[in-house]
Length: 162
Image 1: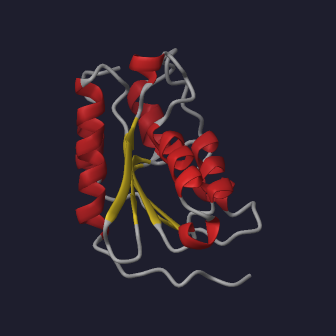
Image 2: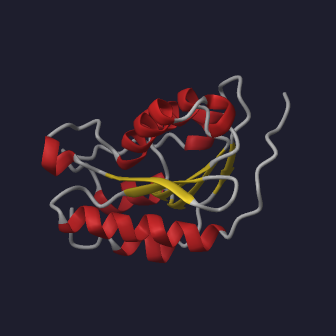
């Protein structure tokens, strides 16, 4: 399998943007998750927040919302050289969306297993214990995965929410 030629980026800098979006999402009455898409030149080209509170759609995770926008706006040839930064590890559904959109790299904050420990069996977020690496390495595209990073920072947005 041929690996993508992704740019070297300041992962912590961009991950902090995604975490800030998670705070914005929470302030708007949504679940506290945010995601951004960064192009090869380091420019933030798209951003998305969770929209469960606004839409009532349990599938409207920040990462899936971002992948829907990205796959409509850009072709997979462009997206394979882009990086998605997510405030928390993408769930299985969002990882599938990343795969189908054709993103080349995923960088995330808090690990899904830690989110599960933190919030327990909350009916609005029945977190799975299925790492995004497992989902993303099951496909035929190479997708680099980096994380967890900035775990303390990315977990703070969840304190008192669930």
